[in-house]
Length: 139
Image 1: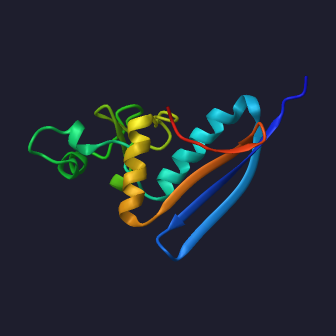
Image 2 (image 1 turned 90 degrees about the vertical axis):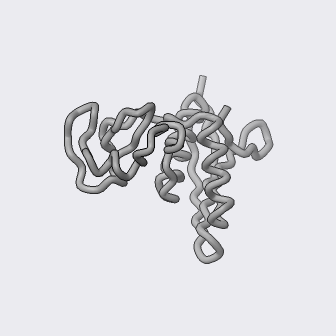
């Protein structure tokens, strides 16, 4: 049996000046995984922080101070040159190579949408299945 290709569209708007639209397709079996990767790329494009800093650091020292102490990946031990290349998930620092794939859940997705609203930006992924366009969201 042939694997059906599902088309999808990614719409990214930064403020009022720039809109990017990309159209692709993916095998139905790979749809969820692919769209999660695309969503993660959209979050990186908009420079969204995946982790809610307030929930991770409940002490008086902020994220800036912790990152200035060490820009070293807890997983592989490499050192990055800028703090934007470190992702913190569950208090563990990851470089780009070690960062777990798709750490996106419903709460992160909702924070991303609020983040975009504040900036006046939009990032949407739509896919076409069973004769209808469906907006992709996380569960």
